[in-house]
Image (cartoon, rainbow, N blue to C red; front, side, top):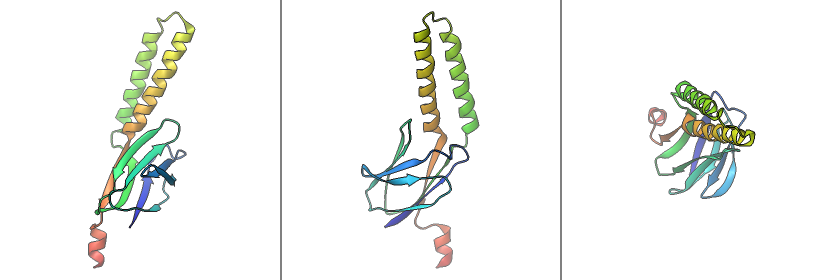
Length: 138
């Protein structure tokens, strides 16, 4: 059966998701471009995002017809929280006397918070096969 994949995000449009079906690469999913993929019931779809290896796994059921990826509703709050955490860690690490240790702390905290932000900023919606559009046609 075929299911459609849609990505509707307002930020991060340049980055794409790489789609894996049961561990095998199937292609890329870009923003505002609908992609259809052949799946079987029980397949596991894995969505990975570029450098930071964000990953979301979805198990395909008989009800799965469409997967929509959108931004989380709390993205502003999440972004503010990550910025505040980064600035707090930066202030705490100012007391470090070694420049190498300071740079290591800054870079690792930035990468960790960026990964955390990306992981919590997406919302995956799985649309069932018996939606209102299909019922109104019949």
